[in-house]
Image 1 (cartoon, rainbow, N blue to C red):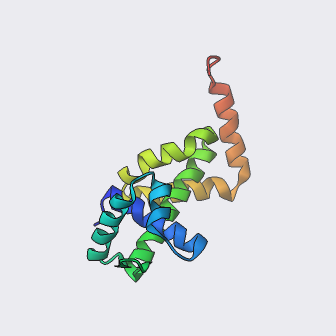
Image 2: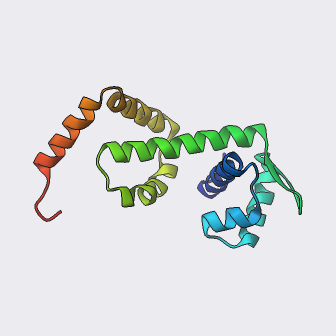
Length: 142
């Protein structure tokens, strides 16, 4: 089972590979705001745990297990962003809020969030109704 820190690295590596075709230690470090030496240590650990294959000075590739986990982590992140957007969280808060909660939810909870997001996206009138309720309940100081 991956730790929250391992998940952050796997997710970032997956995204980089999807976007660029490769993931370098320097890119991972920059995207996660950590030192390259920390990335190297984690990459070695992820290699030992069979999430990726790392060859010093050659780069890294995700294993089948790593790709599966990476895909699921990206899905979880996007799903939570969608939920927060639907319920009216300010755009500038969404990324930080998702980072704060994504590791604390079970996959069962994520599946239920998926059901809820689907429910709202299935009929845009539901989102409109939710926004109307929010406007009614807004506080003047906000």
